[in-house]
Length: 435
Image 1 (cartoon, rainbow, N blue to C red):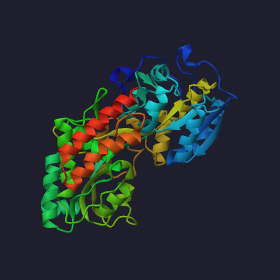
Image 2 (cartoon, rainbow, N blue to C red):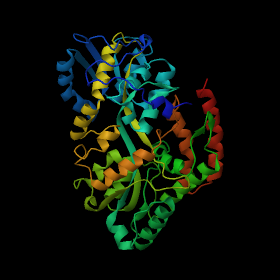
Image 3 (cartoon, one colour):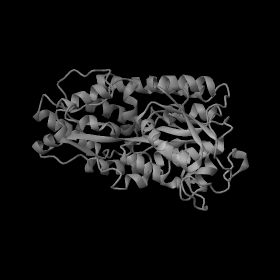
Image 4 (cartoon, rainbow, N blue to C red):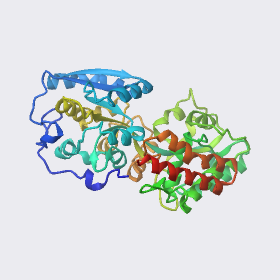
């Protein structure tokens, strides 16, 4: 699998342009004429129900006024969105110009099927729009087989949430390594038997995304090229570590089916010292109406493992152009505007931060973020890996396979046997997925 490289993301030196002006000249083969006017064009944009969508809708009149184009939005719930894409994209319909999609779930499927237009020349051609400003992890995720097929709009990373008061009472510093994290979880639980040292996702599929940070930081991965890698020594250590961290430092019976709401609830109710989960969910921890420990929540970069600190840094959503669109020129103008530095900064000030490094570095853009969280996000963004699950066509099935050893490890079962079985199943799965 090829999911981007620094070479793919390198910018070509090109003439600059303002947000809604024409791009530098690009290949006619792309179907995008950078010198064409989009005035009078209707751009049909299909978006998911999401805070990004609600926020960008308020800004779209600015784009329409500047370009003379009209944006026609279809907004759907995620399941409806998937159903529409399955029908219309598979049928080669041209009635969608711009689509909002989930790279983690759909990038390989859509790219393999030829649904997504190649945007490589467009993103490399405009130095002012600046593709290099997008964080490496999300940008690599929307790149497939050397072609940029999407532009990230929503990102998230793993962050370590911790209880400041419990660390202070124990005389401990914030853990910077996984070894220190386990030692702190053990010490706090021993001093506070009613408090779990660590809580995390335990459900077979749900745990995969957050476990990925532990896997990568141990030097493991889901695959090596097209082969399963979950049977490696590094992956085995990661599975065992994660299971031990949740199982051994609590007196409570561990719920075997927790996703983030259930795991967060344990922390919110003051019953856990640490949890590593998505930074995009942080307000669930700091809102006093939801969290009894809101005043004592701290944030830290993901701790270093044997291979360093390697949390995920992913694009949860991206914008792409339908390969069958007859309006590729106007579609690219819309994406370029919606993901420009100017628009991204406006969106951040309205509470929706994306994938641009310059926006995360702008103190005016993220004034509402806790300072400690903002610093953790910056560090995790630099270290982050661009995927948090196997990037395959049948993502749900893959998550079930690689998630089984997580469940066994948390339950204290025979982890090596579970890994052997999962490794064999995943090897067979990857062979079928590659066909």
